Image (cartoon, rainbow, N blue to C red; front, side, top):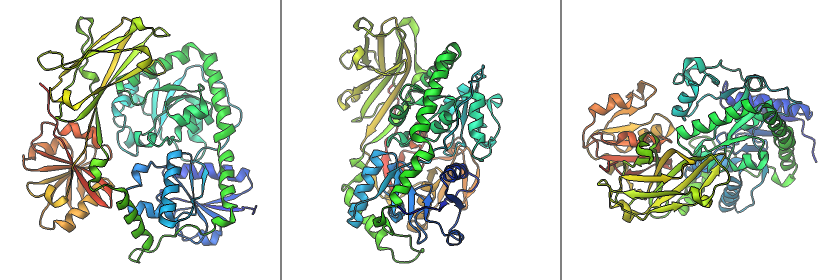
Length: 583
């Protein structure tokens, strides 16, 4: 095995979370006798003369002649339909991931494009190993550390938690303006140790995963930070976390509506306060599990082992300068096209989720929930979230559900939910009830729930799925004004394509609920400002990764044409159905 003396760490996000990752990797490599250098550009890498380059994400790409290994910490939905993203991925000499689905996809991609096997190692940007942990603080407070880089995700839940008095949100001040001022913690420097120290002082850390990351079982760094710090983790129920940590963390169901999540988190905090010895033992077990299998000193040797395979050298395809012919990029585009059906949108059903928990009525002791959406031909499911106090469940405590139309008449058979049909996460139980298209045509308006006295209904969520029809940009924008909901990468790609294909048309405005101003000469305004100016023949294009939560906000507005923009080779548009109240 060749001796590795220097590793160049490459990323293009100075002053952000990647800088914290560099600090951690540098510490771990230093303990292994390896020098590390941080590089934002390629200029000084040759002077450093590393044995290899470690790119912190799939978005960097190989840009030097040195062997380069890419950390694949993004979900496949971000990558697989974009030739430029695939091109960056293929530039690496090896790939580093903990996700089985990402690895399987990489194997398929590399073989299809290059006719060669791919090389990979089990690795993620974790945290350096930490020494024995201190005793937990007497008064436990819950910390969430983050920059909120993807917008006000979980805003409803975080706002509710911020009113408790024992939950604090740390990060840039501009990221946490929507939570109570008393719950805003200080910004934390990216120095490799201050984040861990914050968790140690607070005693507990909140671990959330983005839903698109959950689809590929990709964990957030929060789980490593909290357990490395010796704090107790309140974590979403992710298979990766279950596998590595077992019962040494407290789980909640992140797919539950905010009210049910808040209830679970509150229960966990009460349990910690009432059971300090048991909570302390969980912390010790989680810390030991982290140091044993997940600390950087345990993961980096996997990278060194891949590097030692002589056959790996120069196996990737370094990126070429803009404007030069790139046959690999052409093969990527062809491969994406080969994976698509004639109507790719209809091959991948779209699913929108709507939280109906606030519509719950508990009058008369019979909980019920209004289902305000109805789509002809749509396949729908309703998820019910319950708390059940005794354990184990018995058949005497069954829950019955019946769908009713707007007039109150039953429009489907009564369904009895037996204990074995209820999925359990902690002490929250969930049941998914499918509603077929034939029932939907009868316009169900209510779901009536009759439960045993031991049950408490905490939330109801409706999932609406349909096969979106693909349309061209010119047909979508043939008349009326065009409003683009979003200001991120997808919106910019869409705007550039719009300007190239429809030079005589204009974009009325970009819609962004948190910023105002101008973008490429076009106004940016919140929906509340844009809505009064919209006309029935206008179209709204959702160019935002959170389209499924934004889409219901457009119900009842003037435009009769709604679309979703899918980033990829340009932007593909798919039709979104208009929301309709069932009343």
